[in-house]
Image (tube, rainbow, N blue to C red; front, side, top):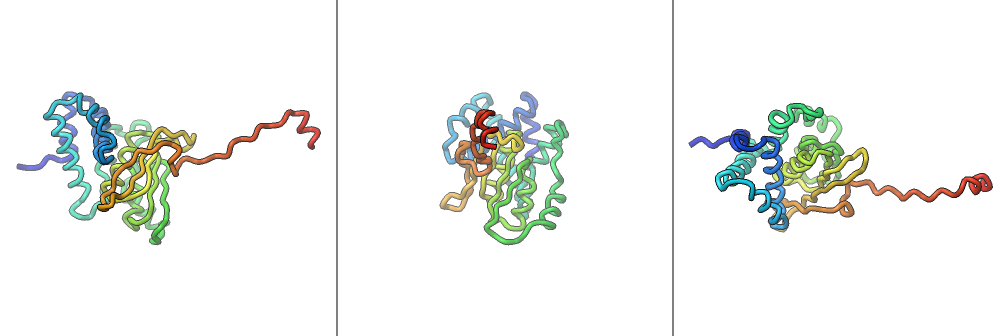
Length: 224
């Protein structure tokens, strides 16, 4: 029996549900599954909407995703971003992600091979630039942020499945407005997992100095 692809499984679920909602729910269920039980209540809330057969299909979709991302042992393949671009947004709001080959070329031009570095993409999409950097040195720390929640979730999942550590924030990088995020760290067994973090624990959010209260205009003149 031929195994269905990730795209075919998600498409099969879309017969009764909105495709964007199906995809978003899938992403959040995976986030919950990779959180070591901390998000079990939210996971149960999401699946309560679906039938047992549909829940099994979501599990099959994750299995297919892992196999396809492995890319016959090569890894670092962005299956989620490809599906999102072609089947969900179709370029809506300019959400055409940079081709992986271009991301790889950019990293070859600018990235160093040294370990212990922090790599940041403040508009990460599905995390392709970070994935390209990880190909060169997976031991670096990777940080991504995106204003689109689905994009932030895709990046967090891609990092987990590619054994990349760091942080992903759902935030507006231009306005420095934080909505949520995850730290990706390794369990003592070596397997990466997600920890949901508040703004205070984010290493991506800028810590701007508080503006000092301006003195009265007359005082300014006197001081001058």
